[in-house]
Image (cartoon, rainbow, N blue to C red; front, side, top):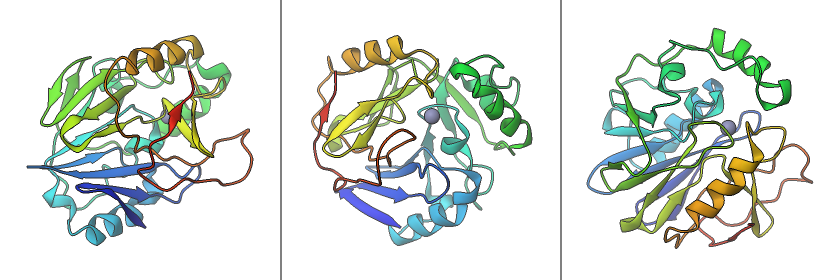
Length: 229
Ligand SMILES: [Zn+2]
């Protein structure tokens, strides 16, 4: 399913496991922000189609981080031929040159590492980015903590910010990435404070509640919400 968040911004409602979101952004170019699990490929293709696009139309992919639920469809989207932008700290993992570390996220990263060994990674150009880089209408903001290279993207022209897994939506609030799923929760808090130094007129990342939260609660996409500090 795809939901229009605001003019030029669509949210693809992925269905697999933790139900990550991917976003389609149209300004002068077409950008895909994050891409779901491998099993979300039909959902992402249908979402693109419903918004009036196909993978071949995508000019760039912006990745908030390397987690498999954000990069999983990239090797499967037929016709996708676009550069993948990801923070330099995580580009080697996306390139298949490194695996996620054994010891991180309180032991669960070992499962992610094993999953990654079987993950088909995309054969597309990878562009390593850093804090403050401009990519088209987006500005990359390095927001480490959930992962070391986690990056949020601000699009001032569309009044949108893409938070990735820095924070997730629950009821009317956004909650910080939690202890179990974060490399470093102190860095998560610092990243949120740093991000709030920027102008953030509109929150568009609308993830489902994660483990430890109650029920499936979702606010309407595009609803400005308070980010817990
Ligand atoms: Zn993640």
